[in-house]
Image (cartoon, rainbow, N blue to C red; front, side, top):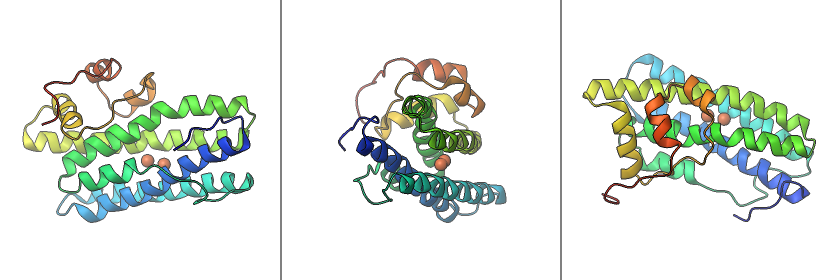
Length: 209
Ligand SMILES: [Fe+2]
Ligand SMILES: [Fe+2]
């Protein structure tokens, strides 16, 4: 996808479109968690159903802003990373929790403040308010993923932080772009040890397995 400057009308709309597409995929991702994994505690399902409702409201809010700029969802090409990782982790709720909320949605926590600064610079206060809502809610989504990730680790008797880093390597998942949003990640449940690792350049151990 071409990266256009947010200061151009096309670049501004393309940025909002990229966010809308992530929110759209996130609705399906949360619903897939409800559907895919069977026999878990009831609050796994109610938790992800609540997330799906929040993602739908995010999608609506971003689409409203996109329409205010004279565009609509579907006007630009879109990146499918979130859905691809959803498909790759369909066999295992522990891997799903690690790689989707705890890797990909957590990257959204890091990405949002720089995007907010760009929107502030071009005077788009309305979208800024939408992103404040999204950032607040997304901390909750990562926290829900963190809680269930740690729960599945405890059930299997594996250490969460080492398991998380090994899964990132096994699935060739993306590494965070610095700087990390440390307050948001801490609130979502990340530990100081893993934040120090994630904030440093990626170390690959023996390549892909
Ligand atoms: Fe969202
Ligand atoms: Fe989310």
